[in-house]
Length: 584
Image (tube, rainbow, N blue to C red):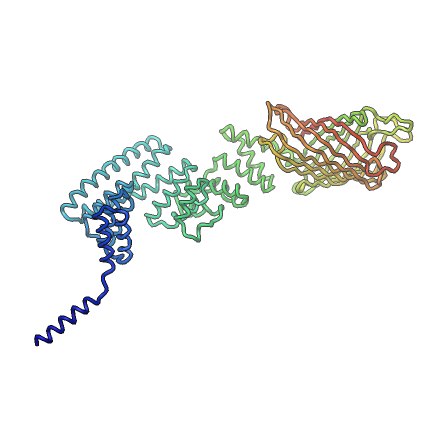
């Protein structure tokens, strides 16, 4: 019997000896050894490995938290105490440590919440400490809420009061109150886009997931990188690529109060949609904003600009007309200017007058071209009938040679015609009339039938003369004209200018450029086939009428056809003149 008992004891010892050592125990022994040696960095590392080996042990989390406190890592210690409480909610000593660290690391709402739990459910010693700490946090919060509420009763539009009240209410877990005043603060200062993050956080705590999502989507489109990046981290991956037009839509759709929310959200969405080029979306949001506040003249002005950008000028002028009655001088002035610019194009009758006199050194002559034209708008038809009086003349009249040539038509041209609406800078036109010469020419009468028609195109890129910013520019003008009086000829004039708009200097606005011109005709007459190129300058003063512009160019010209040409095949020409136009 004794022999059998000895064998069993030996066998048990052998089995125990053969069992592998507890890896967590070995890791902890190394952690505690490092801790006793005040080697806190290695101690923290070993505690971390022990947690990986035994993640459900609250005591290891607690010891790691104290190790973090030894090296001043307060937030890391707080987070480990939080895990320890999650694993062992009844460790009131650890709960107190966690609550005090939350307060120290500015998480006062969580500190207050934890102290409140301890003072209600903890042991006697912990309840006493928690009660004192809770009152030290809660009493100032309650007093601050009362004080800021009173301030808002006296000044409801005080942004700072709304923001402070919201922050205090959130710390005191009065989340409905916090959401209300974060929202009101955002309405007062939409540029304070970090408030969207505050709203999202409070709405999330209230379980309003759709409202929170709308706030974070709006914050994602913020111009402040910090706000946008924070929103990106808070949103699920599927929402991180939301398009700008939809960014605030969720916020408007799910939040209240409806009137203020619709007005604010719609205005913000309209602005962002307009900048992104989503004009139809911008229009829809602006209409929503106008319905929410029919007296908002800034929305009326934006509606005018949006309709104008959509080429719906009939609607645009209506909104500009309303906005120019704004009590705010800046809005009224901008809307009034836009209204006056659009009105001629939409009026039943529109009269345009322009003049272009210039001196040519090549011909030692002053030429002048001018026109007065009155158009009739016929509803929405894409063309307009018009009556026109043109003037084409010069001062020298002829070349003065043995066989003198007239240098211009020297006539008034009276005509009736039709012109199409402009489409991307292109206009078609045609007219029939009479040329009345103010000179008595040999073998010709003073009056002669005149039929003309063709196409005119103009476009420009870059910084215009009179703009706010300097920079490169390019202008092009092309006119194809049929003229019955020139043997039923068809002429093409193509003029191009490429250059730089200089910064304004004491009211002087200037462009320096290079000319490149081409003239050709169907009859292949030498005088109508040449190219020109050379430098030029165009300038005006800010005090002048906007359409008054002076120009000077030094051109080198080359005839491309020289049959019957009595002159040299190339020439120089200094041209100086001005352009002026007015529309009523």
